[in-house]
Image (cartoon, rainbow, N blue to C red):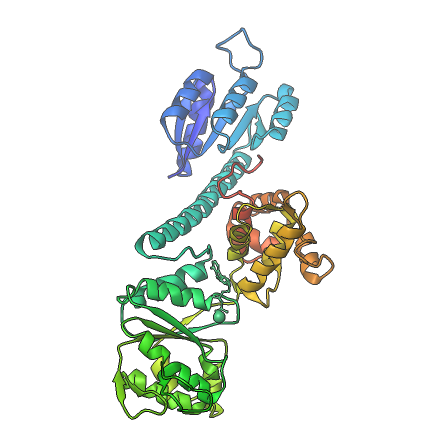
Length: 450
Ligand SMILES: Nc1ncnc2c1ncn2[C@@H]1O[C@H](COP(=O)(O)OP(=O)(O)O)[C@@H](O)[C@H]1O
Ligand SMILES: [Mg+2]
């Protein structure tokens, strides 16, 4: 139940308001003097204050209402205050609204109007509470993840990454193969490292092979090893990556590029742990956890006969799908700051524009953009121009249309604090509005008219 503090020296006013609010399921607290009012605030949680402007108890000051308002404002900057004022003092009340009072009502007040104002404020307080809870929940979730698992310094803030890491870390301990899918530069190799770091074989080696880097026979030699003279150029016998990864993890990057012959051999190792070096009849046995990654559409490749279906199912027991950076824009500014590493700071417009970019090269592209900008920045301030962000594109135009804090605040007020309504008014999704509230620090900020 919401609670409202009424500070007024007239018992009749207090009682009338108490009765009115109790009929609308609002809990009331009352105080007859400013001092008493401040004492109640120090003691009890209150959602809204309704305060008188004239107190007859103290004759030394003609402006006790103003003094009281300032005192509340200073001690509780987030607490909405409604002023009750005589017609003769309306001007003072209007001034105070400019300096942060939520609203004012002239005495004798109109019950319906008072209730509307009050209910809007209470709803707004409630939705701000919801935003705060959302932010706090996300923070807790991040902390829990970081506490429970070794995340290898990964930087992220988005819901999508939280979910993905929860999955990746949960399956990390099992010996099951993991397939990491996602576009280039999105961080697939980083995720593979995290899976290894949280696996049962984390004290074993983590060996990486890029299946796209070598043609046909050479990639097989790379994976399975070769005896001397097995093929042209194989002067010495050498072990393959499977042997090197024994007791640990083998990371097969760009698995979609593995030729069909190699795919068949790979399937056999996955099923039996057995293989032979090229040019050798001796069967070797290893225990290796396999993580593979691809930016290709393996399902489509299976359909087209370019990738073995049986291997696909073998590798894809657990799929960890890494979204492109553009689909987790909450990660962009934290990543940019991470890559800046204290060598500079983002300008406000860079902060606004960065998350709106398409980032076709994903995190790798962002990292390179920051590295370049740091070198070019004179005073350590990284601007959109230094980052090569176009300011004439549709994206930039969208940013110029970016609702200001003021617009967001009034949309919240006009929609009675209901987030979904305010979001619709602003042409934003609920999530997008939450993001902006967070970005502007409004989630933890204050009252509506502040
Ligand atoms: N969440 C992240 N936090 C910190 N660095 C990241 C993150 N994601 C990617 N990177 C960095 O971005 C670059 C590209 O990541 P990488 O794992 O190689 O991508 P992919 O394998 O998908 O092409 C690397 O330098 C990596 O360290
Ligand atoms: Mg990679």
